[in-house]
Amino acid sequence: MKREQLTEKILDFKREAGWSWKHIAEEIGGMSPILVVGALLGQMRLPKALAEKAASLFDLSEAEKRMLGEVPLRGTPMPPTDPLIYRLYELVMVNGPALKALIEEEFGDGIMSAIDFDLTLDRLANAKGDRVQLVMSGKFLPYKYYGAEQGVPEYGFRED
Image 1 (cartoon, rainbow, N blue to C red):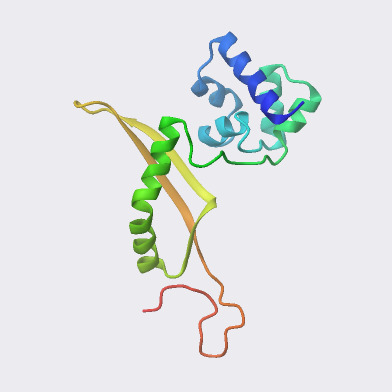
Image 2 (image 1 turned 120 degrees about the horizontal axis):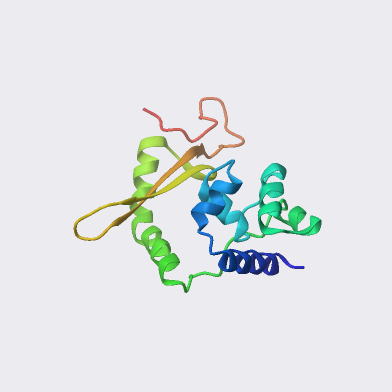
């Protein structure tokens, strides 16, 4: 079985059971619902204890349970074709240069981690139509200036 086939099996089971992602994430628990759903969709891995819960919930075989614990090949073809995912891509493409400039001005020469990272999603009621709130928090990782000579900073932290 390939990982995509396991995802389809999980989606079929979800559909037949009439479960919501919220219900599934609560049943499995243990970490952010975004990570749990991402793992079930094949983009993340589940730690053993959570893979065990998922396997029980979805009536998976031992091999399928182990597959949930494997590190997946992540990502989708670019640019994305799904309209919602494309809008997230567009958000980064349009706002990315400004965010990059502001992050570098505040922190220095580096990146925001997408590995040491928190992400939350909330629904905000609004009279003009409910709003999606995404909150991202990633660790700042400065570039290392390897081979730096004496007097030259070793890392790209902001210099005051």
